[in-house]
Length: 257
Length: 267
Image (tube, rainbow over all chains, first blue to last red; front, side, top):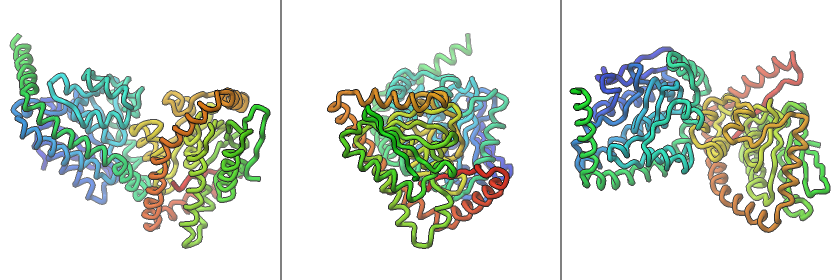
């Protein structure tokens, strides 16, 4: 049914697995559309009371944006790209059911943002997270907005400007990962939490979710409109494309060497 | 008396929520008493700082008295919500520092009360939780206050799971400022209060005014949202059914342990 996802159901819990392990589950436009569709379907299905989101393989939850797609962007395409995020993030924000991230490995950039928009995060020491966009010449707007809601301004500025990845322990210490467990326990722990939340009174659950979305709606809209403006300017400068070409050239050289 | 006050010579007024048999749960008389007392203390020049704590050794405040909310007559909802509004406003407008001495569980509106205070000292055994979801109620003011203090990541976790956090973990998060043994709690809270009472009064007054004003708009917006969300929840009939189940489970337990009981809030 899906080309880039595996969707399974056990009792009231739906598990969505990002499934492009060859590229660390990085996403391009078709995969993002599938993810939005899978979440919307789970949201509409009455038998589903909680959703677990995870990645295939043992290295990555998701590396985020597939750079082989974005290296070809121009100013106008970059603006459309932001509208694609509105669709996916809108699907996540519209969830009436709890969403649990089972962080089986790294979550970078937009995948970090997706993880932060889940409700509960389970990870292990190797579940690195961060916002490395700056290193590819990509400006960040949605990531800093999400981080600021969770971490305050001090850590948000440091993480945005350095593009530094945090390890799982740091993420746990500052409250981004709620449960730090052994790597082989991540999925089972996420499933346990999902089952527990699936058993909560669904009306109160839905209203709590709705309220958190309402509380953050103005900030979301602001981050998106800033994103369109800023990505257009960034891509029009040609810098992101150059940085990404350099990334691919370096990787090719490493492979040859 | 649902409320006990003690005043010492150092301008510190200690207020004890005093319904230990109900884990100091907030019913209408207790809410009114707290609101009235803060109203008087606000204008009393002899009072510079308030310490708020709970009677007994089990609870700071177990939150909303579920026995009261389960028995609300049809149409009594607006008056009941108005009572909560008066209660929260008393904190939102109180011009002096409040120290919460958290001597045991702080759940739902009990935790909200602690979060409306300025400095929190707790015993290691204190359990903090927003339990509303477990009885079918949304936690709107609770979600707001946790978000302000902890950021959204931890706030969402606590509101959706209704799980409890011990004082030690809460202190690592910065939610509780100090953890002290039960026998030292009252003295430590009083010492913090005295040190605040000795601050230069104009600087303290202006700082407090700024802090309260900065938080008031968010709190009032959350309260208004709480009324909308509670009405939506109650219209489905789900919370009443959940509370009934919760209270009957409690009655069952009470047969074994008469003291056992827990409550939670409406907001």
